[in-house]
Amino acid sequence: MNGSMEHDDTLTSAVAELSARDPDLRAVYERLGPPPSRRESPGFASLIRILTAQQVSLASASAIWTRLNQVIEVTPQAIAGASDEDFRAAGFSRPKVRYARALADHIVSGRLDLGILPDLPDDQVRVALTAVPGIGRWTADIYLLFCLGRLDTWPGGDLAIQEALRDVKRLEARPNEKQTRLLAENWQPYRGAAAQLLWQHYRHLKFGNKSGENAVFPVTDATSP
Image (cartoon, rainbow, N blue to C red; front, side, top):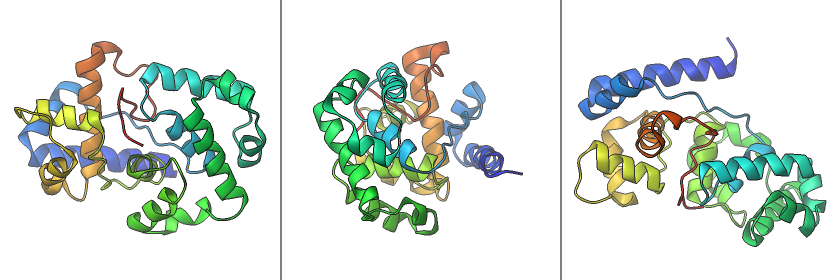
C-alpha cells in the first residue's frame, strides 16, 4: 500500500471515529459522506500552490495555479529567476510575488530545508515555515495537514472552518480561533480530519452540488496567511 492510500484509509477511519463521538459531525458525515482525499506531495510546488490559495476563491486559486504552470516551471530556481511580467501573467498580486520569491530564496540559500520537515514535530515544522515572509500559521497548518498528513493539525484561524462550526454547532456567532480550539479539543488526535469534514460542509453550504469543483487545498474567500 502506498503512502497516499494509507493516508486515505486513515482519514476514512478517523472520520468514522469522530462521527461515533460527536453527533453533529455524524450528521454531516451521514449527509455528505467522507471528505475526499486532498493529499498533495510535500515540497516546494505544493507550498507555492498553498500561497496562491491565500485569501482568494476556489476558482481564482485554480486559475492562478494553472497560469503559473503555463508561464513558469515551479521550482525554486525558476521562481527565483522569474520576472515581474511572468508573475503578472500568472495573476500574482505584488505581495504574493514577494512571498514566492522569499520562499524560493530561503530554499536556494539553504535557510529552509523542506526535506527534513517530515521528520520534525508539528511545532518545529511551523517554526521553520513561518520564518519565511508570507507564510503564517494558516499556510503552515495546511502544509502539515495536506502535504505531511498530520491528521491532528487544527487550522482554527480559517474562516470557512469557523463558519462551518457556527452552522454545525448551531452557534449564535462565528467562533474566533481560540474558541474553535476549545470546540475541537474532544476531536484529538483527529482534529485535522474533523477540519476536512467541516470544509466539506462549508463547500456544500456555499456551492451545493458543485462544492467539489476546482477544490484541492481548502480555499475560502477570506483565509488568513
